[in-house]
Image 1: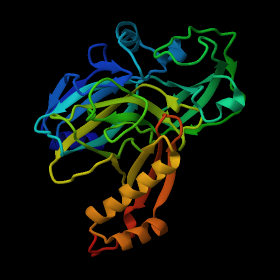
Image 2: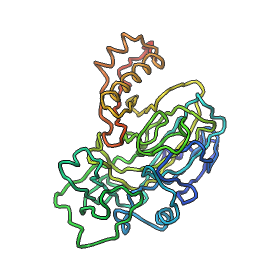
Image 3: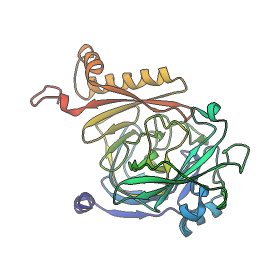
Image 4: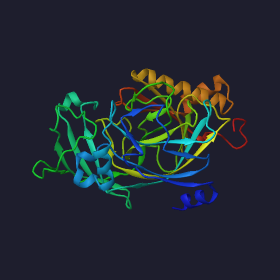
Length: 354
């Protein structure tokens, strides 16, 4: 892990945050949650994030630590995700931007689950819910489906943390010989929201949350507007692979550990989550109406080009149409998502836009 080693050498402090029933919260965001860790800007945190789908195959997706959280963390909902945190950053104030570098990721266990659920885009076509279990080969970078079963534990797959005990007879071998490229990432990351009260963890928003963009993985940097003192960062909903749209309702859901480096930026104001990869700047839009989500992602990109790259509105509008790719992020999180990807290499050396 040369990237991690280099970052640790230059970082101020290093912290370890394990996922336990005392360091996690389940299914909601609440700006009044007290931080369980306080760090300085620039510190590195080794953090564990747990999947809320470990109950789909507890013999494969649970170890003692995961089971402890499932047994003891009973305050759940209205959403479904398990989050680790919050992490407060000293000096963070409303109006600042939280910058999170994902240095490295490592699967906790070599299995993951994909649930074709009732909130999936084509549920009315299949009219059933089905679990498919994948075996992960982190070294080779592949995930292979090994068996599936129809979910019959509840009328609908809607209880956070439901555990389906192994039934060998119900598990049907996956017949197609396929291997899915692994793209480990976090479906949920963000900061404490501006709104008061207990907020459902499923819809994404300006604070981040359940964005479900598979590009939010190792090597990427996320930026979030800060709404509360300390920012109160959290992470959860780890995925091993996902396609754009997350069509059947979920990704390959599996617990994931990561090294994160967290900074506070005082001179980089934003209003919505922004993603930076090695090759692109990516803006996001969220709305119950996919057309409005698309519009928001476009408006966010216009704002980025004008305010961060110092390009005129007319020039930015042309660049968006000729050089920016718009993609459906997800259609299954109540508030749907679109994102706009701007290639960094369109800016020539010496460009006034930086």
